[in-house]
Image (cartoon, rainbow, N blue to C red; front, side, top):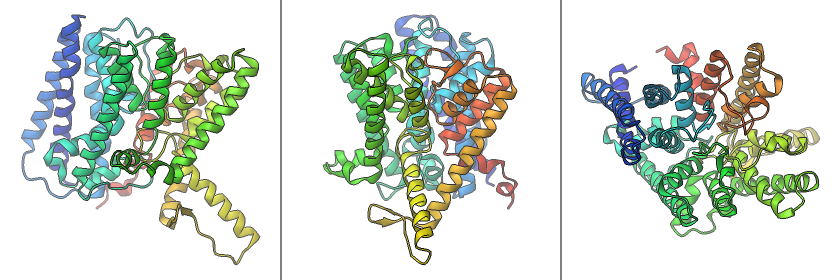
Length: 481
């Protein structure tokens, strides 16, 4: 292990996180909410610590191996959450470091699970930083660092593979730095477009940016206690629904679309599956809520479409208390929590691509039983999926379910009821945020014991980094030469 190079790169990352605090500092000074000094102190502390690591371990950075890439990414997210929690802690937003770290980790991992009781009472600078952690974590701090910091260009592919969501990593450009820059250009274009549309509907710049950050990162922190439902605006519901669906799609497809390949989306079998899932569950929940909750079919369509998009893409915004919906609709939303967005999107969950491949594997196995001597392959479009990818998908699914069961066992051991325990674990490992029971859309995670919060923080990181990145660090063989 090249620990000097690793620490130097981590120092650069911490420095970058500190530099990003200049934006919430600007809003704090503009609105004069009294949180300027805590944010400034947090920023200077991060900059100083990051620069010190970078300077102390200066020297030429050698080629980074796959193992070192996984370690840098994992420690990078953990440290980013730590330094990202400083504004909460120094401003007195939380009276304990655990709660401050939980909120920060939830932000960077785009989970959106909050321990705040009253969001609207917070100063604007803290609110903006809270939302900005979403935006930075959405496409990935490491990915942004590869695009911005030339020194991270060395070994960039190893960092990219450990960072980018999804079972298959497609390079858009020949060089990894160019790929990172391309993805971030698309990310910024979508962010600017949504911000403009929200402002066009009457939302001011501050709230437009905060809700855009939560949307394009499929995250879910809002500046309102009632989330998007606090606006009670059909226009905002439509804009955010559309951009949630856009953010839940593979960003490589967005790039191709912007380059003029307008059929790129429909050529993708995963994207078609993604849209079919949205359409089917939208239809089911619309009809169920129309018959039992809403007297107006358009109201049922409005709230169902928003909530299906929000949960499928793992954004976590809400416009209604879906715990008041029939159990059938709640079960449908729970199923969507497992599916998640597309590979290569900012969404969490198992991912549509893996769900597709699992279904294809089941069909292959059934065909094999019917025709024992037949030769069957699994294809995505016209391409044959290799056995290595299928083994990776099956392993991912088994580890995912194992961690989910283990998490539920721990949470119930801590005294939580089964519904709350199950929903909190599913919502955190899937990076969704709101669940059911005690962590429902109108509740928060503040009541969960400290040990339970650490468990959920671990699951947030595991889910955001696609399971393997964190789990590999726990294996003794990872540390052997």
